[in-house]
Length: 161
Image (cartoon, rainbow, N blue to C red; front, side, top):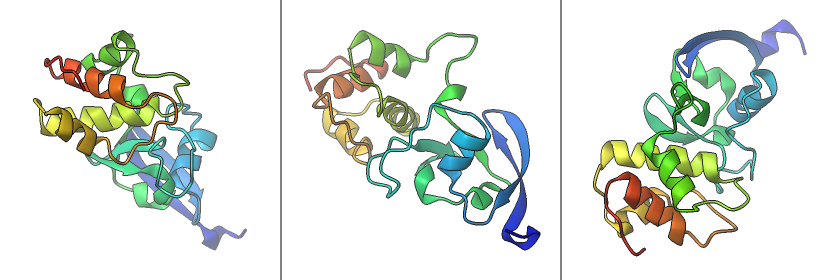
């Protein structure tokens, strides 16, 4: 690969400035995991279907396996690593823990990021709105009931999902 196949990018990641040179075809998920050593976003399907790689990009959820790293230039990106401040879990993370909303944990970071985004936009969602808000995230273990209950609990509404 010659220099013309790379791009210099600068962006904010979890509140910190990042500057890097990236190959033109490097996916954001691979850049985050392999180059920046973040383990929160997971590589699941590489096709945008599972949501394990979900991050916040300029305040919106995106599947980082569907975006090139060069597209991060100038952006603000948050991964699940940014959520817990001083080791304290957010209400969403705490609710996932308390409601046993995970089994293998592979989908959890993407679910938590989508749930966080949902609750920022709709602080009091119904169970149907929670399911709609998480529709781009697949869980192969839980059956979603505890996940929906956890998001409802984080919103301050207990529910029977």
